[in-house]
Image (cartoon, rainbow, N blue to C red; front, top):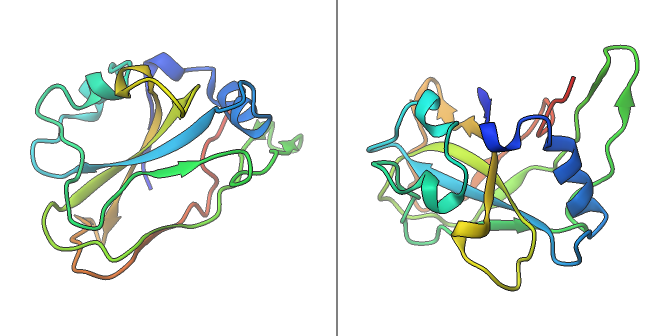
Length: 161
């Protein structure tokens, strides 16, 4: 998967991971959001967005397929990272994530990992986009068809070096 880091999160990726992992603040979570293929702005434009509201304020849209919903990850869904002193980097792992029985509709093009410092209040204007991954099958956008869509992170969810 191709990855971009949003300017607002540059250099903060591991800090935000730690906040969720350590429940600091108590209701800190990551939110996985899918962006539709149609109208998707370029990576150069997307990376300058500072909130989830901002991210979908242009021609970019969140997927609206029946069965799609955001995946919320709290401290029980992620693990502490390890430091790779051989390659001088930190790459937190994340288990495969499943979007269950997503119906046809929007084709999916990007998966965005967002940080929400308080999942019990606030709005998308309080959610910070951290990084985005290309969702591609054989070079084309994912086309939901009523089955589960499983997204894997074989190279880790973030890389800080």
